[in-house]
Image (cartoon, rainbow, N blue to C red; front, side, top):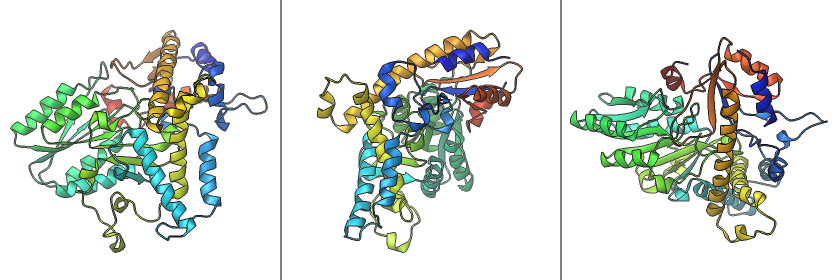
Length: 421
């Protein structure tokens, strides 16, 4: 945290910047964290020069060696396409199965059979928007929020524009608090119903990537389902910071980007299997009878990336073991999902303390303006400005000090404009 103290001492009087505590899992000098830090080559000092402090949440997390090694092993140990019935092909089948099971454990999805791999979260949003909108007709409606990343807005907006007579509703958050009230959804859904508009889908974020707001997804999903709408959740910024349970939230779609939680650059989507089997999509003739979710994944899958994602999830599950007392052996009796919950609970509490400490120091600088998120539950994300100094100049100065932060709207364009940054 000495970099934060230096930031408080040197930052001077900008469009907002973002400070994200999880980006590197770079923590204080507590020796209990050394075992975790040693897993990340990018966090180790080189030739006596301290590694940078990676606080750029939108840039993704750093990557532990186990993930890179898992990917390299797949690429160098003999691999083939699936379904061949010989060892190299069987290995490919095993990698895909393990990937789906691991993602289902991470997200507590209803079934591995609903887990889909995507090149990115944005590509998954566009693919599913095209597929789902095939069944939309005049009198239907879609609901989005202005708190979201644009990848969870534009695909739905553009899908609506292609469907004659389909209505779009935008639910807005409170710019003073950053909160997204579930009752606003109820009001908007009821207004649609009174206008004879059948809301087919409610798309919203699990956590704002600029303010850190974590909407009450469970309550919103319950309300949306009362009106017959499907619920689509962008958990890209939520998954690295919290215990996620698709089952508990009772949402229909939930996805994220693996590079936000130590994995390679890719996207994953979990869907309730009974919903997935009803979604139409274009596919090649040989894929006509492919099972779910294979028919939503085109071409040969990148097996090395799938293996990297599985390794990243295994690493998350191991965090609690790395932090445990040497005498503790309870982890060996737990399922992977139980270890993930335990690990992410520790992560969540540690990040909260980091955020509070960083906010305290930043608040001590008169010319720093914190775009406060007053939501009761939030991620360790701080959005701030420095009066009179362009954001590019601020983050360039910080980069020179070895503190990497992001600057701008981070694709949450509607939210940034709404809070008048």
